[in-house]
Image 1: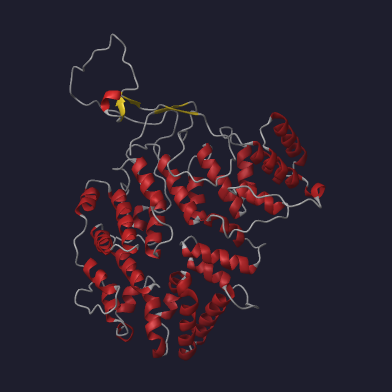
Image 2 (image 1 turned 90 degrees about the vertical axis):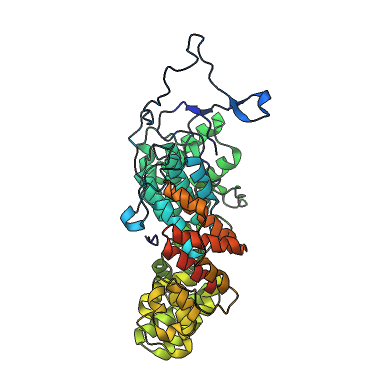
Amino acid sequence: MTVRGAACLVGFVTLASAPFAQEAPLSAIDWLSESVEQPDTIAVAPQTDPAAQGNPGSVATRTPPADEAPVTNSAITPDVTVQTLGGPAPKTLGLLPPETTGLPANLWSGSDVATLSTLLMAEQIDTLPALQDLIITLSIAQADPALDDPSNSAFLLARVDKLLAFGAMEPAQALLEDANTQNPQVFRRLFDVSLLTGTENAVCRMLKSAPDVAPTAAARIFCLARSGDWSAAALTLNTGQALGDIDGDTAALLSRFLDSELFEGEGDLTPPDPVTPLTFRMFEAIGEPLTTRNLPRAFSHADLRSNVGWKAQLEAAERLARSGAISPNALVGLYSDRVPSASGGAFERAKAVIALDSALDAADPAATAEAIETLWNEAASLGIVTALAQHFAPRLIEARVDPSAHGTLFKLLLLSDLYETAALDPDLAKTDPFLAALATGDPADALALRPAYPVLQEAFRAGADSTLTEMASAGQLGEAILRTIATVQQGLDGDRIALREGIATLRALGLEDVARRTALQYAILP
Protein backbone atom coordinates (compact mmCIF):
# COMPACT_ATOMS: atom_id res chain seq x y z
CA MET A 1 0.00 0.00 0.00
CA THR A 2 1.07 3.62 -0.48
CA VAL A 3 0.67 6.16 2.28
CA ARG A 4 2.49 9.05 0.71
CA GLY A 5 -0.09 11.65 0.26
CA ALA A 6 -1.95 12.48 0.86
CA ALA A 7 -0.06 1.21 29.83
CA CYS A 8 -2.85 0.91 32.14
CA LEU A 9 -5.72 3.38 32.48
CA VAL A 10 -7.26 4.21 35.86
CA GLY A 11 -10.98 4.83 36.18
CA PHE A 12 -12.21 8.35 36.61
CA VAL A 13 -15.41 10.27 37.17
CA THR A 14 -15.85 13.73 35.63
CA LEU A 15 -18.12 16.49 36.82
CA ALA A 16 -18.60 17.77 33.26
CA SER A 17 -20.89 16.13 30.75
CA ALA A 18 -19.01 17.09 27.59
CA PRO A 19 -17.91 13.97 25.68
CA PHE A 20 -14.23 14.98 25.69
CA ALA A 21 -14.02 15.88 29.38
CA GLN A 22 -11.32 13.74 30.96
CA GLU A 23 -7.87 13.87 32.43
CA ALA A 24 -5.28 15.74 30.38
CA PRO A 25 -4.28 13.48 27.48
CA LEU A 26 -0.91 11.81 27.42
CA SER A 27 -0.04 13.99 24.45
CA ALA A 28 -0.58 17.39 26.11
CA ILE A 29 1.90 20.05 24.98
CA ASP A 30 3.15 22.72 27.33
CA TRP A 31 2.85 25.87 25.20
CA LEU A 32 -0.92 25.99 24.69
CA SER A 33 -2.60 29.20 25.82
CA GLU A 34 -4.79 29.08 28.91
CA SER A 35 -7.66 30.24 26.74
CA VAL A 36 -10.50 28.32 28.40
CA GLU A 37 -11.31 27.15 31.88
CA GLN A 38 -10.58 23.44 32.13
CA PRO A 39 -13.36 21.20 33.44
CA ASP A 40 -12.90 19.77 36.91
CA THR A 41 -11.84 16.12 36.87
CA ILE A 42 -11.81 13.63 39.67
CA ALA A 43 -9.37 10.76 39.17
CA VAL A 44 -9.84 7.58 41.15
CA ALA A 45 -6.39 6.32 42.04
CA PRO A 46 -5.83 2.57 42.24
CA GLN A 47 -5.27 1.26 45.76
CA THR A 48 -2.42 -1.00 46.73
CA ASP A 49 -2.46 -4.07 48.93
CA PRO A 50 0.61 -4.00 51.22
CA ALA A 51 0.78 -7.76 50.89
CA ALA A 52 0.91 -7.51 47.11
CA GLN A 53 4.52 -6.25 47.09
CA GLY A 54 3.51 -2.74 46.06
CA ASN A 55 1.75 -3.68 42.85
CA PRO A 56 -0.65 -0.82 42.08
CA GLY A 57 -4.26 -1.61 41.46
CA SER A 58 -4.22 -4.79 43.54
CA VAL A 59 -7.24 -3.72 45.59
CA ALA A 60 -10.65 -2.93 44.14
CA THR A 61 -11.71 0.72 44.37
CA ARG A 62 -15.33 -0.33 45.04
CA THR A 63 -16.62 -1.99 48.20
CA PRO A 64 -19.57 -4.27 47.34
CA PRO A 65 -22.80 -4.07 49.36
CA ALA A 66 -23.13 -6.66 52.13
CA ASP A 67 -26.11 -8.31 50.44
CA GLU A 68 -24.43 -8.68 47.07
CA ALA A 69 -23.85 -12.27 45.94
CA PRO A 70 -20.13 -13.15 46.02
CA VAL A 71 -20.24 -14.92 42.67
CA THR A 72 -22.29 -14.79 39.50
CA ASN A 73 -24.68 -17.57 38.55
CA SER A 74 -23.22 -17.82 35.04
CA ALA A 75 -19.85 -17.66 33.34
CA ILE A 76 -21.35 -16.19 30.18
CA THR A 77 -19.91 -12.79 29.29
CA PRO A 78 -22.74 -10.24 28.97
CA ASP A 79 -23.04 -8.02 25.92
CA VAL A 80 -21.93 -4.53 26.84
CA THR A 81 -22.36 -1.43 24.72
CA VAL A 82 -20.04 1.46 25.59
CA GLN A 83 -20.89 5.07 24.71
CA THR A 84 -20.12 8.40 26.32
CA LEU A 85 -23.01 9.63 28.48
CA GLY A 86 -24.75 12.52 26.80
CA GLY A 87 -22.34 12.42 23.87
CA PRO A 88 -22.69 11.76 20.18
CA ALA A 89 -22.29 8.39 18.54
CA PRO A 90 -18.69 7.32 17.84
CA LYS A 91 -17.31 9.23 14.88
CA THR A 92 -14.60 8.36 12.42
CA LEU A 93 -12.35 11.42 12.46
CA GLY A 94 -9.73 12.13 9.84
CA LEU A 95 -9.01 14.02 6.65
CA LEU A 96 -7.96 11.30 4.21
CA PRO A 97 -10.16 8.25 3.55
CA PRO A 98 -8.74 4.70 3.36
CA GLU A 99 -8.88 4.70 -0.44
CA THR A 100 -6.49 7.67 -0.45
CA THR A 101 -4.06 6.58 2.27
CA GLY A 102 -4.18 2.84 1.60
CA LEU A 103 -4.64 2.37 5.35
CA PRO A 104 -7.69 0.40 6.53
CA ALA A 105 -10.53 1.87 8.58
CA ASN A 106 -9.69 -0.47 11.50
CA LEU A 107 -6.17 0.97 11.70
CA TRP A 108 -6.45 1.77 15.43
CA SER A 109 -9.46 -0.23 16.60
CA GLY A 110 -7.51 -3.20 18.00
CA SER A 111 -5.24 -1.16 20.29
CA ASP A 112 -5.79 0.86 23.48
CA VAL A 113 -5.62 4.64 23.34
CA ALA A 114 -2.93 5.03 26.03
CA THR A 115 -0.48 2.86 24.08
CA LEU A 116 -1.27 4.54 20.77
CA SER A 117 -0.93 8.04 22.22
CA THR A 118 2.38 7.22 23.88
CA LEU A 119 3.81 5.64 20.74
CA LEU A 120 2.66 8.46 18.47
CA MET A 121 4.00 11.25 20.65
CA ALA A 122 7.34 9.44 21.03
CA GLU A 123 8.02 9.42 17.29
CA GLN A 124 10.83 11.77 16.33
CA ILE A 125 10.12 14.89 14.29
CA ASP A 126 13.63 15.39 12.91
CA THR A 127 13.92 12.24 10.86
CA LEU A 128 13.87 11.17 7.22
CA PRO A 129 11.16 12.80 5.07
CA ALA A 130 9.62 9.41 4.25
CA LEU A 131 9.02 8.73 7.95
CA GLN A 132 7.76 12.28 8.52
CA ASP A 133 5.23 11.77 5.73
CA LEU A 134 4.12 8.46 7.24
CA ILE A 135 3.63 9.91 10.73
CA ILE A 136 1.62 12.85 9.38
CA THR A 137 -0.47 10.52 7.23
CA LEU A 138 -1.20 8.31 10.24
CA SER A 139 -2.25 11.41 12.16
CA ILE A 140 -4.79 12.55 9.56
CA ALA A 141 -6.06 9.21 8.28
CA GLN A 142 -9.77 8.48 8.65
CA ALA A 143 -10.08 5.48 10.94
CA ASP A 144 -12.34 3.93 13.54
CA PRO A 145 -11.77 4.71 17.24
CA ALA A 146 -9.23 2.93 19.39
CA LEU A 147 -10.33 -0.03 21.49
CA ASP A 148 -11.16 1.94 24.65
CA ASP A 149 -11.85 5.34 23.06
CA PRO A 150 -15.39 4.97 21.66
CA SER A 151 -15.92 8.73 21.33
CA ASN A 152 -12.65 8.99 19.34
CA SER A 153 -11.65 11.85 21.62
CA ALA A 154 -8.43 11.09 23.48
CA PHE A 155 -6.51 9.84 20.46
CA LEU A 156 -7.80 12.75 18.38
CA LEU A 157 -6.05 15.11 20.78
CA ALA A 158 -2.86 13.06 20.53
CA ARG A 159 -3.02 13.20 16.72
CA VAL A 160 -3.59 16.96 16.75
CA ASP A 161 -0.74 17.51 19.20
CA LYS A 162 1.60 15.49 17.01
CA LEU A 163 0.65 17.65 14.02
CA LEU A 164 1.28 20.75 16.12
CA ALA A 165 4.71 19.38 17.06
CA PHE A 166 5.48 19.01 13.35
CA GLY A 167 4.15 22.51 12.75
CA ALA A 168 1.48 21.09 10.43
CA MET A 169 -1.16 23.68 11.30
CA GLU A 170 -3.48 23.32 8.32
CA PRO A 171 -4.36 19.64 8.88
CA ALA A 172 -4.46 20.19 12.64
CA GLN A 173 -6.97 23.00 12.19
CA ALA A 174 -9.08 20.90 9.83
CA LEU A 175 -9.18 18.00 12.32
CA LEU A 176 -10.19 20.34 15.14
CA GLU A 177 -12.92 22.02 13.12
CA ASP A 178 -14.37 18.60 12.29
CA ALA A 179 -14.46 17.64 15.98
CA ASN A 180 -16.66 18.90 18.80
CA THR A 181 -15.42 22.50 19.01
CA GLN A 182 -17.49 23.15 22.14
CA ASN A 183 -15.23 20.79 24.04
CA PRO A 184 -12.64 22.81 26.01
CA GLN A 185 -9.67 20.62 25.03
CA VAL A 186 -10.54 20.91 21.35
CA PHE A 187 -11.34 24.60 21.47
CA ARG A 188 -8.12 25.39 23.33
CA ARG A 189 -6.10 23.99 20.46
CA LEU A 190 -8.28 25.57 17.78
CA PHE A 191 -7.90 28.95 19.50
CA ASP A 192 -4.11 28.73 19.38
CA VAL A 193 -3.95 27.46 15.80
CA SER A 194 -6.10 30.42 14.78
CA LEU A 195 -3.83 32.85 16.61
CA LEU A 196 -0.77 31.58 14.76
CA THR A 197 -2.42 31.50 11.34
CA GLY A 198 -4.10 34.89 11.62
CA THR A 199 -7.70 33.60 11.68
CA GLU A 200 -8.45 34.57 15.27
CA ASN A 201 -11.50 36.72 14.45
CA ALA A 202 -13.50 33.65 13.45
CA VAL A 203 -12.58 31.71 16.57
CA CYS A 204 -13.37 34.72 18.78
CA ARG A 205 -16.84 34.84 17.23
CA MET A 206 -17.13 31.12 17.89
CA LEU A 207 -16.20 31.70 21.53
CA LYS A 208 -19.18 34.04 22.00
CA SER A 209 -21.61 31.38 20.79
CA ALA A 210 -20.11 28.39 22.62
CA PRO A 211 -21.96 28.03 25.94
CA ASP A 212 -19.99 24.95 26.99
CA VAL A 213 -16.64 26.73 26.63
CA ALA A 214 -15.74 29.13 29.44
CA PRO A 215 -12.95 31.48 28.33
CA THR A 216 -10.31 32.64 30.76
CA ALA A 217 -10.10 36.35 31.45
CA ALA A 218 -7.09 36.83 29.15
CA ALA A 219 -8.80 35.12 26.20
CA ARG A 220 -12.04 37.03 26.81
CA ILE A 221 -10.18 40.36 26.92
CA PHE A 222 -8.26 39.56 23.76
CA CYS A 223 -11.42 38.65 21.85
CA LEU A 224 -13.34 41.66 23.13
CA ALA A 225 -10.55 43.92 21.91
CA ARG A 226 -10.40 42.15 18.54
CA SER A 227 -14.11 42.78 18.10
CA GLY A 228 -13.63 46.49 18.90
CA ASP A 229 -15.31 46.44 22.31
CA TRP A 230 -12.47 48.15 24.15
CA SER A 231 -14.62 49.36 27.06
CA ALA A 232 -15.81 45.84 27.89
CA ALA A 233 -12.23 44.56 27.55
CA ALA A 234 -10.93 47.21 30.00
CA LEU A 235 -13.75 46.47 32.45
CA THR A 236 -13.00 42.74 32.28
CA LEU A 237 -9.32 43.44 32.94
CA ASN A 238 -10.05 45.66 35.96
CA THR A 239 -12.52 43.14 37.37
CA GLY A 240 -10.08 40.27 36.86
CA GLN A 241 -7.33 42.14 38.68
CA ALA A 242 -9.64 43.02 41.57
CA LEU A 243 -10.75 39.41 41.96
CA GLY A 244 -7.21 38.07 41.65
CA ASP A 245 -8.06 36.11 38.49
CA ILE A 246 -5.26 37.77 36.50
CA ASP A 247 -1.64 37.69 37.69
CA GLY A 248 0.60 40.74 37.59
CA ASP A 249 2.63 39.85 34.50
CA THR A 250 -0.47 38.99 32.49
CA ALA A 251 -2.21 42.17 33.67
CA ALA A 252 0.79 44.26 32.57
CA LEU A 253 0.74 42.68 29.12
CA LEU A 254 -3.04 43.05 28.76
CA SER A 255 -2.88 46.68 29.87
CA ARG A 256 -0.37 47.51 27.16
CA PHE A 257 -2.35 45.47 24.66
CA LEU A 258 -5.44 47.59 25.35
CA ASP A 259 -3.65 50.96 25.37
CA SER A 260 0.04 50.88 24.55
CA GLU A 261 0.27 54.67 24.38
CA LEU A 262 -0.07 54.88 28.14
CA PHE A 263 3.24 53.05 28.52
CA GLU A 264 5.40 54.95 26.04
CA GLY A 265 8.93 55.39 27.31
CA GLU A 266 8.72 52.44 29.68
CA GLY A 267 11.00 49.45 29.23
CA ASP A 268 10.06 46.34 27.31
CA LEU A 269 8.21 43.56 29.09
CA THR A 270 9.93 40.26 29.86
CA PRO A 271 8.46 37.47 27.71
CA PRO A 272 6.86 34.65 29.72
CA ASP A 273 8.22 31.12 29.77
CA PRO A 274 6.77 29.34 27.98
CA VAL A 275 5.54 31.74 25.33
CA THR A 276 2.00 30.85 24.29
CA PRO A 277 0.30 31.82 21.03
CA LEU A 278 -1.87 34.28 22.97
CA THR A 279 1.06 36.07 24.62
CA PHE A 280 2.98 35.88 21.33
CA ARG A 281 0.21 37.75 19.48
CA MET A 282 -0.17 40.34 22.24
CA PHE A 283 3.58 41.05 22.32
CA GLU A 284 3.35 41.57 18.57
CA ALA A 285 0.38 43.92 19.01
CA ILE A 286 2.22 46.16 21.52
CA GLY A 287 5.18 46.58 19.18
CA GLU A 288 7.51 44.11 20.93
CA PRO A 289 7.41 41.14 18.52
CA LEU A 290 9.14 37.96 19.65
CA THR A 291 11.41 35.99 17.34
CA THR A 292 10.08 32.55 16.43
CA ARG A 293 13.55 31.08 15.98
CA ASN A 294 13.71 29.48 19.44
CA LEU A 295 9.98 28.78 19.76
CA PRO A 296 8.21 25.53 18.77
CA ARG A 297 7.81 24.96 15.03
CA ALA A 298 4.13 25.85 15.09
CA PHE A 299 5.02 29.49 15.80
CA SER A 300 6.85 29.69 12.47
CA HIS A 301 3.48 29.95 10.74
CA ALA A 302 3.14 33.45 12.17
CA ASP A 303 6.12 34.44 10.01
CA LEU A 304 4.40 33.26 6.83
CA ARG A 305 1.89 36.10 6.99
CA SER A 306 2.12 38.84 4.36
CA ASN A 307 2.94 41.53 6.94
CA VAL A 308 6.24 39.82 7.78
CA GLY A 309 9.50 40.51 5.94
CA TRP A 310 10.49 38.23 3.06
CA LYS A 311 13.66 36.91 4.71
CA ALA A 312 11.72 35.90 7.83
CA GLN A 313 9.09 34.27 5.61
CA LEU A 314 11.75 32.24 3.80
CA GLU A 315 13.42 31.10 7.01
CA ALA A 316 10.08 30.09 8.51
CA ALA A 317 9.12 28.19 5.35
CA GLU A 318 12.45 26.34 5.35
CA ARG A 319 12.02 25.36 8.98
CA LEU A 320 8.54 24.03 8.30
CA ALA A 321 9.63 22.26 5.11
CA ARG A 322 12.28 20.37 7.09
CA SER A 323 9.52 18.71 9.10
CA GLY A 324 7.19 18.22 6.14
CA ALA A 325 4.72 20.74 7.60
CA ILE A 326 4.20 22.76 4.41
CA SER A 327 4.00 21.63 0.81
CA PRO A 328 6.97 21.84 -1.56
CA ASN A 329 4.93 24.15 -3.78
CA ALA A 330 4.41 26.58 -0.89
CA LEU A 331 8.17 26.67 -0.24
CA VAL A 332 9.04 27.22 -3.90
CA GLY A 333 6.28 29.82 -4.19
CA LEU A 334 7.92 31.91 -1.48
CA TYR A 335 11.39 31.50 -3.02
CA SER A 336 9.99 32.73 -6.35
CA ASP A 337 7.94 35.55 -4.89
CA ARG A 338 10.54 38.22 -5.65
CA VAL A 339 14.11 38.68 -6.87
CA PRO A 340 16.68 38.53 -4.03
CA SER A 341 18.42 41.87 -3.59
CA ALA A 342 20.91 40.54 -1.03
CA SER A 343 23.12 37.49 -0.67
CA GLY A 344 23.69 34.73 1.85
CA GLY A 345 21.43 32.28 3.67
CA ALA A 346 17.88 31.89 2.41
CA PHE A 347 18.53 34.37 -0.39
CA GLU A 348 21.05 31.96 -1.94
CA ARG A 349 18.47 29.17 -1.92
CA ALA A 350 15.98 31.54 -3.53
CA LYS A 351 18.51 32.37 -6.26
CA ALA A 352 19.15 28.67 -6.87
CA VAL A 353 15.43 27.90 -7.18
CA ILE A 354 14.85 30.82 -9.54
CA ALA A 355 17.88 29.82 -11.65
CA LEU A 356 16.67 26.23 -12.06
CA ASP A 357 13.16 27.39 -12.90
CA SER A 358 14.53 29.74 -15.55
CA ALA A 359 16.85 27.12 -17.02
CA LEU A 360 14.00 24.63 -17.33
CA ASP A 361 11.80 27.27 -18.97
CA ALA A 362 14.57 27.97 -21.47
CA ALA A 363 15.19 24.24 -22.12
CA ASP A 364 18.92 24.93 -21.84
CA PRO A 365 20.79 21.67 -21.02
CA ALA A 366 23.99 23.38 -19.84
CA ALA A 367 22.21 26.00 -17.73
CA THR A 368 19.94 23.31 -16.25
CA ALA A 369 22.95 21.17 -15.32
CA GLU A 370 24.63 24.12 -13.62
CA ALA A 371 21.44 25.06 -11.78
CA ILE A 372 20.94 21.48 -10.57
CA GLU A 373 24.43 21.38 -9.06
CA THR A 374 23.92 24.77 -7.40
CA LEU A 375 20.57 23.77 -5.96
CA TRP A 376 22.01 20.56 -4.52
CA ASN A 377 24.94 22.39 -2.94
CA GLU A 378 22.69 25.03 -1.38
CA ALA A 379 19.85 22.83 -0.17
CA ALA A 380 21.12 19.31 0.61
CA SER A 381 22.79 20.05 3.93
CA LEU A 382 19.86 22.17 5.09
CA GLY A 383 17.31 19.33 4.97
CA ILE A 384 15.04 20.84 2.32
CA VAL A 385 16.40 19.19 -0.81
CA THR A 386 13.75 16.45 -0.74
CA ALA A 387 10.97 19.05 -0.80
CA LEU A 388 12.63 20.85 -3.74
CA ALA A 389 13.20 17.55 -5.56
CA GLN A 390 9.52 16.75 -5.13
CA HIS A 391 8.55 20.06 -6.71
CA PHE A 392 10.92 19.99 -9.68
CA ALA A 393 10.85 16.23 -10.45
CA PRO A 394 7.99 16.30 -13.02
CA ARG A 395 9.92 18.83 -15.09
CA LEU A 396 13.37 17.36 -14.48
CA ILE A 397 12.31 13.88 -15.63
CA GLU A 398 11.42 15.36 -19.03
CA ALA A 399 14.29 17.84 -19.30
CA ARG A 400 17.41 17.61 -21.43
CA VAL A 401 20.33 17.94 -19.04
CA ASP A 402 24.03 17.99 -19.79
CA PRO A 403 25.53 14.58 -18.80
CA SER A 404 27.94 16.31 -16.41
CA ALA A 405 25.04 16.68 -13.93
CA HIS A 406 23.44 13.27 -14.44
CA GLY A 407 24.70 11.98 -11.08
CA THR A 408 23.17 14.86 -9.14
CA LEU A 409 20.04 14.79 -11.30
CA PHE A 410 19.61 11.09 -10.50
CA LYS A 411 19.86 11.74 -6.76
CA LEU A 412 17.30 14.51 -6.97
CA LEU A 413 14.85 12.33 -8.86
CA LEU A 414 15.38 9.41 -6.45
CA LEU A 415 14.30 11.72 -3.63
CA SER A 416 10.97 12.34 -5.36
CA ASP A 417 7.87 10.26 -6.08
CA LEU A 418 9.35 9.53 -9.52
CA TYR A 419 12.22 7.48 -8.11
CA GLU A 420 11.23 4.27 -9.91
CA THR A 421 10.80 6.03 -13.26
CA ALA A 422 14.24 7.58 -12.87
CA ALA A 423 15.77 4.20 -12.03
CA LEU A 424 14.54 2.80 -15.37
CA ASP A 425 16.45 5.48 -17.32
CA PRO A 426 19.71 3.77 -18.34
CA ASP A 427 21.66 7.02 -18.67
CA LEU A 428 20.79 7.99 -15.10
CA ALA A 429 20.92 4.48 -13.61
CA LYS A 430 24.50 3.91 -14.71
CA THR A 431 25.65 6.76 -12.44
CA ASP A 432 24.83 4.54 -9.45
CA PRO A 433 23.56 1.02 -10.29
CA PHE A 434 22.98 0.13 -6.64
CA LEU A 435 20.62 3.06 -6.08
CA ALA A 436 18.82 2.14 -9.29
CA ALA A 437 18.33 -1.43 -8.06
CA LEU A 438 17.23 -0.17 -4.65
CA ALA A 439 14.64 2.09 -6.26
CA THR A 440 13.09 -0.88 -8.04
CA GLY A 441 13.01 -2.88 -4.81
CA ASP A 442 15.57 -5.53 -5.78
CA PRO A 443 19.14 -4.64 -4.76
CA ALA A 444 20.14 -8.25 -3.97
CA ASP A 445 22.59 -8.65 -6.87
CA ALA A 446 23.84 -5.05 -7.08
CA LEU A 447 27.36 -4.16 -6.03
CA ALA A 448 27.18 -2.40 -2.66
CA LEU A 449 30.27 -0.26 -2.97
CA ARG A 450 29.48 2.55 -0.53
CA PRO A 451 29.40 2.27 3.29
CA ALA A 452 25.62 2.79 3.60
CA TYR A 453 24.72 0.23 0.93
CA PRO A 454 25.35 -3.23 2.50
CA VAL A 455 22.85 -2.80 5.36
CA LEU A 456 20.20 -1.69 2.86
CA GLN A 457 20.92 -4.70 0.70
CA GLU A 458 20.47 -6.92 3.76
CA ALA A 459 17.22 -5.15 4.67
CA PHE A 460 15.61 -6.06 1.34
CA ARG A 461 16.27 -9.76 1.84
CA ALA A 462 15.83 -9.94 5.63
CA GLY A 463 12.82 -11.27 7.50
CA ALA A 464 10.39 -8.95 9.24
CA ASP A 465 9.79 -8.72 12.98
CA SER A 466 7.32 -11.57 13.50
CA THR A 467 5.85 -9.99 16.64
CA LEU A 468 4.88 -6.87 14.71
CA THR A 469 3.50 -8.72 11.70
CA GLU A 470 1.42 -10.91 14.02
CA MET A 471 0.18 -7.78 15.77
CA ALA A 472 -0.90 -6.34 12.43
CA SER A 473 -2.68 -9.58 11.52
CA ALA A 474 -4.54 -9.44 14.85
CA GLY A 475 -6.12 -6.07 14.02
CA GLN A 476 -3.43 -3.79 15.47
CA LEU A 477 -1.91 -2.50 12.23
CA GLY A 478 -1.60 1.11 13.37
CA GLU A 479 0.24 0.13 16.53
CA ALA A 480 2.52 -2.19 14.56
CA ILE A 481 3.37 0.64 12.14
CA LEU A 482 4.16 3.06 14.97
CA ARG A 483 6.45 0.47 16.60
CA THR A 484 8.13 -0.20 13.26
CA ILE A 485 8.82 3.50 12.72
CA ALA A 486 10.50 3.56 16.14
CA THR A 487 12.61 0.56 15.13
CA VAL A 488 13.72 2.26 11.91
CA GLN A 489 14.59 5.39 13.86
CA GLN A 490 16.71 3.32 16.21
CA GLY A 491 18.49 2.11 13.10
CA LEU A 492 19.01 5.66 11.82
CA ASP A 493 20.57 6.45 15.19
CA GLY A 494 23.22 3.79 14.59
CA ASP A 495 21.76 0.32 15.22
CA ARG A 496 22.32 -1.57 11.94
CA ILE A 497 20.26 -4.56 13.05
CA ALA A 498 17.30 -2.34 13.89
CA LEU A 499 17.57 -0.55 10.53
CA ARG A 500 17.61 -3.82 8.63
CA GLU A 501 14.71 -5.25 10.61
CA GLY A 502 12.70 -2.02 10.51
CA ILE A 503 12.85 -1.64 6.72
CA ALA A 504 12.04 -5.32 6.27
CA THR A 505 9.02 -4.94 8.55
CA LEU A 506 7.77 -1.87 6.68
CA ARG A 507 7.72 -3.99 3.55
CA ALA A 508 5.97 -6.87 5.30
CA LEU A 509 3.28 -4.47 6.56
CA GLY A 510 2.53 -3.42 2.99
CA LEU A 511 4.46 -0.13 3.13
CA GLU A 512 6.74 -0.88 0.19
CA ASP A 513 6.83 2.72 -1.02
CA VAL A 514 7.77 3.98 2.44
CA ALA A 515 10.47 1.31 2.76
CA ARG A 516 12.06 2.20 -0.57
CA ARG A 517 11.93 5.93 0.02
CA THR A 518 13.38 5.48 3.51
CA ALA A 519 16.24 3.39 2.13
CA LEU A 520 16.94 5.83 -0.70
CA GLN A 521 16.95 8.84 1.62
CA TYR A 522 19.23 7.03 4.07
CA ALA A 523 21.66 6.33 1.24
CA ILE A 524 21.52 9.74 -0.45
CA LEU A 525 20.94 12.49 2.08
CA PRO A 526 23.97 13.94 3.84
